[in-house]
Image (cartoon, rainbow, N blue to C red; front, top):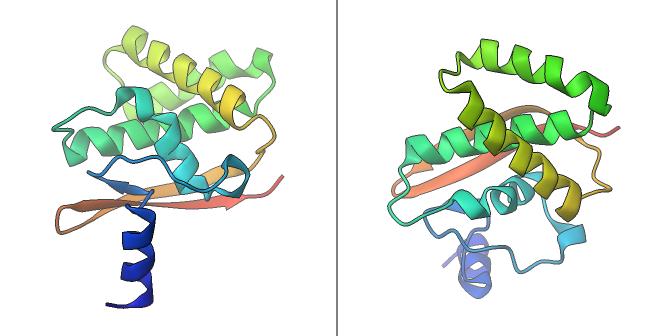
Length: 137
């Protein structure tokens, strides 16, 4: 067993991975950004969550994260641009999810001002891994 596998086994999960869905055991101040996004989507995770739905939730969390960094007056226009870019069909439902995720971000990680530049969900066997590129403000 390699060091990474042993560490995952000791932690009980890979916190940035699906389908295990366990929250990280590290302190909230020591989480990678990918782990923070996984924490944000916790209320929306369910048994049998498909990789496609998981990827959509991570995308919503990334959008909510970046929107929460903007001044409140700029958020509605930025959200409309994000919806147009993503070709969102059910705007009302998507807006509710984004608003909830923004509130969670502000409650859980109020002092984390990193901007998400890109994100990716990749699959390896039955695991999904979240990778984030960010800018420090």
